[in-house]
Image 1: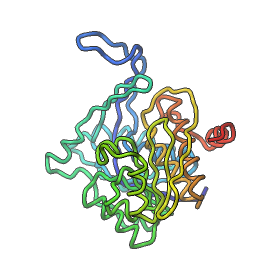
Image 2: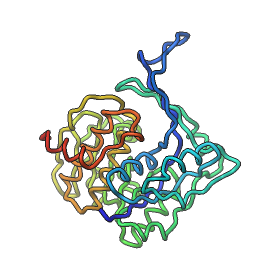
Image 3: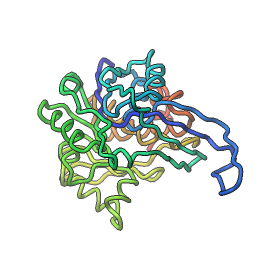
Amino acid sequence: MNKKICMFGQILGTHSFYLKNGFPIPDEYSEISQKYFLPGGETGTAATVLQSLGVYVKMDGTHIGTEVAPMLREFYQDKSVDLSSLFFDPEYSGLMDYVLISGLDRTPMGTFQALYELGIKRWNMPKESDITEADVVGIDPFFLEETQAAAEMCVKHGIPYVTIDSPHDSYLHQHCAVNVVSKECLSAHYQNMEKEEVMKLLQANTDGLSIITTGGNPMLYGRKDGEIHAMETFHVELKSTLGAGDTYKAGCLYALAQGWEDEKIVRFASACSAIAISRFPLPLHPPTMAEVEALMASQEV
């Protein structure tokens, strides 16, 4: 697939700890069965998945520093992921998170709030040349006016973009090609509302495709003035949910670049995400096209 995808968003180092016997109890010992330090973040994980699917990716966003940069450079050195737009800060370790995992459950920890509280922007302004060279763009909604600038550049040049967890009244949602809204976004912005009510708001405020995902429950999707469609998720043996949403976004980006219709976009993204939750750690075992096609052929959803 000779497509180029530009992504702007969170790129970090993830310390993941897979626990042997469930989550820790205060003052009691817990055994770690596996631990890794690998690329993470909504953009970092999606880039890893996309290159596994055969796409060239250029990513930008979070500043990288003395601890994160060496890991990223080594990990991506033999992969079709371009890191040249990233800014290296020699006085900063780089953004990292720490995730405890036990089957369906995971607890992420980090210093994301401090990014905003300190008043220091440890992320780039998107580069217009990166966007104009791309077939499709992925935009995370975390970087304030820089995020909107990325979306505005896409609108200016007619480049379709995929975003995540963008509320119905946001610029990012209103101009997107695809917006994937998770249950975390529903809890944060649409408390006490049914999913169908939220879908109607999303559909009414964009010409793009709106999708709501809520774990293993049926996905909802639709467009302005159209019906709300539901689709079951794929059934796999669960290993870890870490990276499931980021992989779903990667699937949407791949499908959008292919020019597929809505049902195929949703189904392909769901299959990618299902494979992601069947393994750990995801960056070392991202879904391949052969695996996604095999899963889609084996199950009707």
